[in-house]
Structures are given as C-alpha cells and as structure tokens.
Image (cartoon, rainbow, N blue to C red):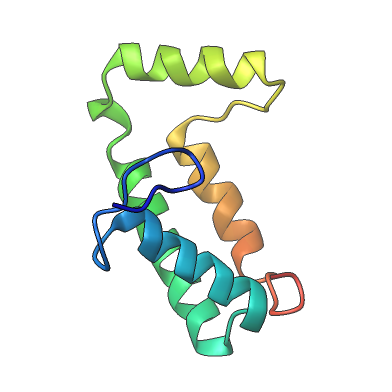
Length: 99
C-alpha cells in the first residue's frame, strides 16, 4: 500500500486523501471557473445560513472551545448570526481574480 506524505496508508483510487490531493492540484494548475465559483459561493452562503439558524442549538462547550481557540489565535470572534451577516456583506464582492 502507498503512503501519503503524512504517513497515512492509501486505500486506492477512492481514498479521500488522494482525491483531495488531486482536487487541490487541479485547482492550483487550472484555477476556478466562473460556474465553480458561483457554486462554491452558493454552498458557502447556504451553510452559513444553516449555521446561523442553529445558533440556539449549538452546545455551550462547542461555543466555548471555538471562542478559546479563536482568542488564542488572535481572531475576531462573532456569533453565528454576525458571521452570516458579514459573509452576506462581502460574498458578492468576490471575483475570479480574488480566487
């Protein structure tokens, strides 16, 4: 069996690490098409909206872990609704040149 760069065993052509590596190399070589960017943004906005709707259903221990990690890394902390509103404000400004 092949090993990945991290010493993980490769499970063949359906291996998640191999598939992800191929996708990353493809993105690096060819970039993102206009259609792919639109799909990525749509999926990102949908995920963000879903997360914002679940604001009261996230266990406090998960929120605490997130806040502590963000603080340790010096990141700005927002709740799920604030994060979604910020994403909505900037999502339409992302261009192919940015990606």
